[in-house]
Image (cartoon, rainbow, N blue to C red):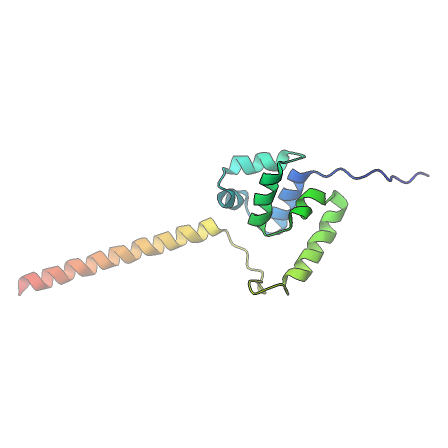
Length: 136
């Protein structure tokens, strides 16, 4: 019986995908944060090794240490995520105790629609006021 002591292969793209999915973030949202297309994020997730500049941007966007992307193997991913979530609830002013996950693009669209409705109402109110004042 032999024990496999060879270092496990790290697939940085797969690590990005796993972390992104575990955090409940869509490719489109990550792409928006990185300033790239969704297809580019998909390409990143297929690559075994990525440029350090890309890894740094992804780690900032996902709010995870760059070492997580660089060093995690298949076996260590779940252990890391459990530790990450256990510690994240206590770390700093901006920690999120509710674990609220949403797509920021959906929120932007929602706010835009609300803004558009408000403008329509303001224009209608203005037109009614002009009409009332012109009748006097």
